[in-house]
Amino acid sequence: MHKIDWDLGSAELGDFSHFMEKEIFEQPNALENAMRGRFSEDGSTAHFGGLRMTPQELRQIDRIVLCACGSAWHACLVAETLIEKFARIPVEVEYASEFRYGNAPLDKNTLVFVISQSGETQDTLAALRESKRKGFKTLAICNVVGSTIAREADGGIYQHSGPEIGVASTKAFTSQICIAAMLALYLGRMRDLSYDKGVRFVEALKQLPSQIKDVINQHEKIKSIAHKYINVHNFLFLGRQSLFPIALEGALKLKEVSYIHAEGYPSAEMKHGPIAMINPEFPSFFLATQKTLFQKVVSNMQEIHARKGPVIALISEGLEVPPGIADDIINIPSVHEAVQPILATVVLQLFAYYIALERGCDVDKPRNLAKSVTVE
Image 1 (cartoon, one colour):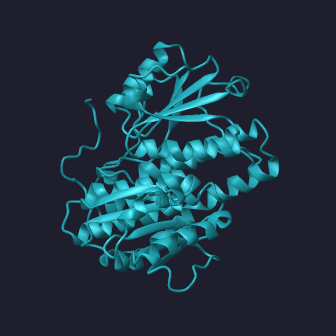
Image 2 (tube, rainbow, N blue to C red):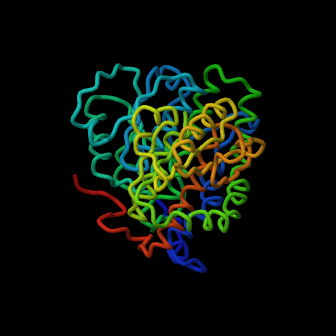
């Protein structure tokens, strides 16, 4: 027996115009729920009661395979970057639909994780079953208590985001990234991540809800920027390292709710093809919040600007884009690198929402899409 603690009010609009808007604004609470009770007493690491694996067993893992579809696949890509950086474990990300039909050579010390908001995604469920059939420990991150994936996985982590009604994933996606960051911290502290770095990591995660509120408070500014681009037909989203998957997610959100063609690319790959498309009607949205890579991303902006392509820059406080290069600039707080993807995501969600709204699109029920894909 499982107690379902969602209340009816969480599935009602309240003071909001759309569920997508409501769920974007609910993200501070959703992330608090994802983190609640999951930090150690000394504040240096995370812990998860549902993994059903001892620290000794987890230390034997020398490879992780992550499987998902859609936005959850983008969350896997962020998880790959964070786990490899902080836990030093090789990670491979697979589309769940491809994993079940492939024959990846996995060794006995491989751990498989599947991610699904609904816990009912057919391809992800099939990947889980294939992994278990081959004898691998298979864990899950999902949001719906008692869902099929939650029941069949060997263990896992619940997101506790509450029901997500809008078809385009918002709070569930950032919750998945938050849990991925906590997992990277948890595994890293078992290996060579120091106590001090663990404490700073935990402090950064705990500050997330208030920082997301700061980002959401810029919604009017983001709305005014979005208004300038409601008639474009193409968009390019660019980021590096953990922000590359966020560029993919930003492009997906725009496609899903506004029906504008968009692509996500690593910033440095822009010169390997996509720059041929740039013209005054083809804007580029740069995610440039990392200090160590900032000047390189600015160089990419200059390439776009020189070809008269409109540039939107998302940057951290304390960084400055040279005058005249960016047509629009959005600032987010300067934060730990593990949580930058979450703050950047909120900006892109609002941006897509306001463009779709002004184009008269049904943001909660985009055409041809379903909330949970339960068929192949």
